Image (cartoon, rainbow, N blue to C red):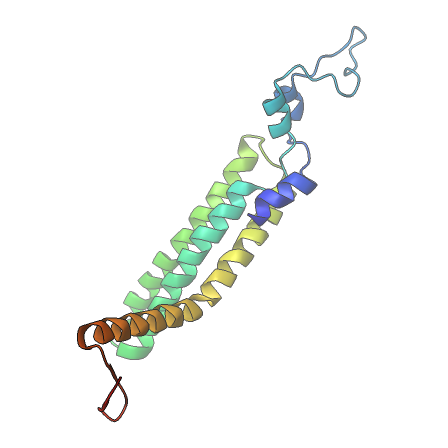
Length: 174
């Protein structure tokens, strides 16, 4: 969402702006006057949505989160079981790196088709990775919310069955 908001307020022309806009050159060979786009309104609007790169932002947010999650699971497994051989650990690190590499590849393809400038992609990648990192750091809070919600659901079903709530001492309260 922050990428979309940034595009609306800070968006700038794409590298392929003139082609998308349908810019017409006058008789002397110079570009036409400002505002002489012959493309559709939607195409002209889209040609001004270069900064920041949405593809880089969304891929870094999603795949960055996945990479961090896989690395975290690998570290937990290594700490708890200590059964991972060095080769298994290295393979796990490579597998955890694949989502990051895929996100970078998605971002780079945006420059190859002249859809974004390098700084558009860099800003989108930083923005996306920041959101992915933030969401990853909040996973413990979400886990606690889910656990608390399950406990309250168990209490309510227990209350529905018996009509009473059991307290810590094992006595029933009305």
